[in-house]
Image 1 (cartoon, rainbow, N blue to C red):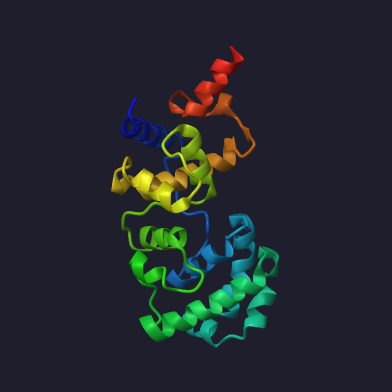
Image 2 (cartoon, rainbow, N blue to C red):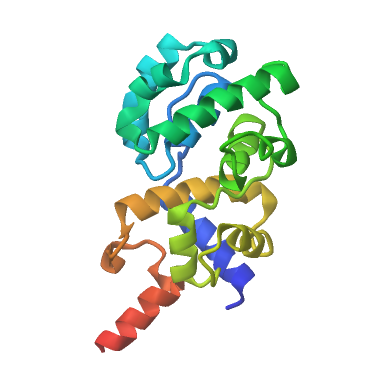
Length: 215
């Protein structure tokens, strides 16, 4: 089985397992997804979703965040961890959105990664979820699972993105990544993957090797 064939079968099986899928972060406005994604670094989406309602109520616009004092932003996001850095990034990010982009979240990866605190993972999520463009959101779940399955062979997010782009149809990338995130949380859990319950074990190199070792 080639990697393209393996990827195609994986996508098919994941669609059957998770037919309806969307970003796990809760947001209503474009800049809110940008901020929520920054908060999600080394923090669970569940925790971010607990924090953002009060944060977005206090600062409802890009302008409000741009004018905010960093210590006040910190007070709202302390439980997300790394809150000093995140609050500073959010403040500077919104100032640049206001000054360089008229308060509008850019729709290209190239522009997005020029914003403070925005890397390719965040930029891909924005262009995919907000603007419906092809995107590969290579977070820790996607990197871990695609390595186990045999589609990628590196922990470097940029290289994983390139390797997946070579075997995954562009129109499938975003939802594939969302499905892998859910699968990583519910079934293929870090350090204790439940291969016996896994819908995609038939095309997973790790599961195949595990079965062979147990025989």
